[in-house]
Amino acid sequence: MFKFKELFGGSHKPNPEEAARLFNSANGLADKGLLDEAIRDYRQALETGGLGKDEGDALAGLGVAQARKGLLDDAIASFRESLKIQPNDPNTLTNLGRACLHKGLVDEALASFRNSLEIRPNHAATLTEVGNAQVKKGLVGEAIASFEKALKVEPNHGVARRNLEAVMGAIECVRSVPEGTDPKEAVDRLSKEGRELLEQGFPNQAIASFRGVLQISPDHVEALDGLGLALAGKGQMDEAIVYFRKSVEMNPRDAYELFNLALALAGKGSLDESIFYYRKSLEINPDNAPTLSNLGAALAQKGLAEEAIACFRKSLEIRPNHPATQNNLETALRERGAAGAAASGD
Image 1: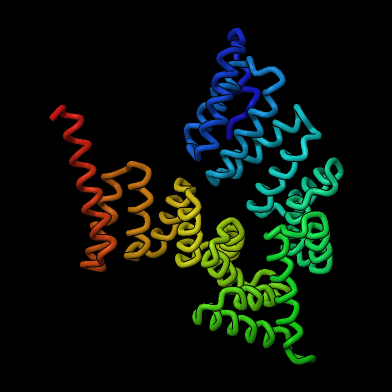
Image 2: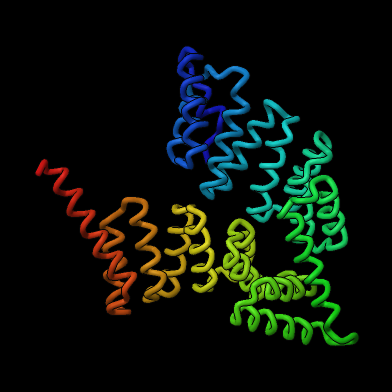
């Protein structure tokens, strides 16, 4: 990982005008979702040495863009550097907490959220994030209090309400297990119930069952993965990724867990990281057609046509005539042909 003072502390003469232009450009690109370009311009703005009072904001903006790309280590480093310049910025403290939470650094996330709340005590989004972190630590009662406080501040805060309902549902699931039931038996029962609900198309109820499992057994891999799948099915990709990451952390040699994490990251647009995990999955199960096909799709989105074509072809050798893979291969071949024609001037 780069060191900011080394990367951005050059000896050239500061250029405030160029720095301001690049900083404004980066902000605009980030707003449009052009994250690679935004990261480039934030870096170049910082390299000029001419940002002055805007340096902290540029580092914070860089961190947000990196976090959206799934570059969590870089994002955490950027937020920390920003906080050296403006230590009392509540937005950056909250964003640092979010990045740490997604990375699995729950204690550091809680500390950052609480520092933010000392400056801005009635911020519903930060209170909700505190609740999310407390859920991951198994502090269910404290999490409920945090979600309720967020809703008192902002009664229509959808995430706080949804997460509160999910926790309460998990509690009800645990309570539904007869008193005196052996914990392992309770976990097996709730896990089986969650799988069945997910297969039947009831993600909300499945989420409650899997959360119930995790209250009893926080490192239960099947529940972590099932909860991730249920959340991803509801479009809650950020939270799904958190649970997939923990599942992979607990079971790093499971090709299926790695595939689910890669798929969720791709769905969020974090292509570099998704490609990394697809490749890790294929190291374990090299002939898995869906993984090869999805890796090809991610590579194609990155403009790596030759690698994508190779993945699609190998996938079709294993699973011939698969319509989506066949279509993706044909598209990649057309685009390669067009690019070749353009390069030759035809």
